[in-house]
Image (tube, helix red, strand yellow):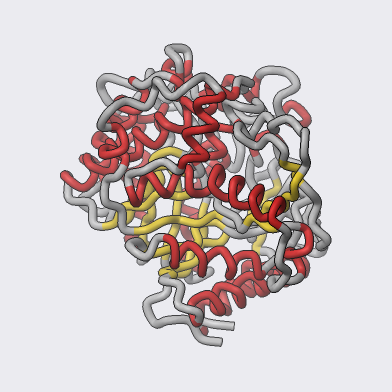
Length: 456
């Protein structure tokens, strides 16, 4: 089962989840610093203060990447390292770290894929309104340009935002992520301003000569319970209608404006019922509709829904009235997420059909299991099976015509898993947080073999 000759194999991480060193070299505070230090927000009171100490151990971590024969490494820039207050002059010591990281990657013949925003908004901007404030989109564009001015001579591949749905609706809607707000109207405003920031930043990147620009979304196929294990199942009219609406709120809310310059009617209706649409100004969608080259897909599991007449909207889903979020009849990971590999092929094929103007890349795919080190090894057979099953579906999607350019496993390292703290391990490399010892799991060795043969 061979992949295309130019298929990109790699791994992904995010700054707050691995870097640590939160008070070094002039770094400012992020919303995740503030959120994780507030009691009750993160499991076991964990924070990203140290995480994987990647800030000091990046050379060794790149050595592991080279050993695994990765062709690409997707990492994010910590905005508070570049502009501690979210605006104004750049911090040269913060940029110097990413300078060294990029140079070390290139020396190892690994392509850097830079994500500009993976949720660590400077706390100073949050105190001025965060993503509910229109000015944050303009500050993001300034920051993006500052980073590109420094790294653009060596970095070809850029992502503006990671999972704006999560940043907006889990951060401002139900409050389980930073900054912990719980107002649907704030979530709708944040979603729009994230998109505006994406468009403004994409234009700055393109003007600076960026070769490839990407928007990364946490998309998923929206299925009825019957469709989880039977793709041919035909839902009734009511279930089909709610599945369409949730797909629109999850995926089309972000990709339609970015690719086509329009909002779906369902999104505008949801905004109208949750604070109104006054934050969407004339000309905004033209700015959001900056040309992009790729859409990054972060896939973990399908979204399963059915009609639930009379149910109120879920806090994370403004516009989801009369929808029941259902369980999937499938085995689960340690996160409790259902394992449905063919959901990935269904999703990739649909997105290629809906957005043929852009290529696709799987920018995150992986699973948490309860890994243990035994005699210096981590026998994570469940993760190997998970990755093998999903890669077979990636191949199926390519054969079905999906314009898929690469696959980045989540994650290179066990790390700080947001509100779950350090309880959940997604890495193909085990991290002993007490000693910072790295151990290649069986899944890492398996993935190295997949890369070596360019197939399964």
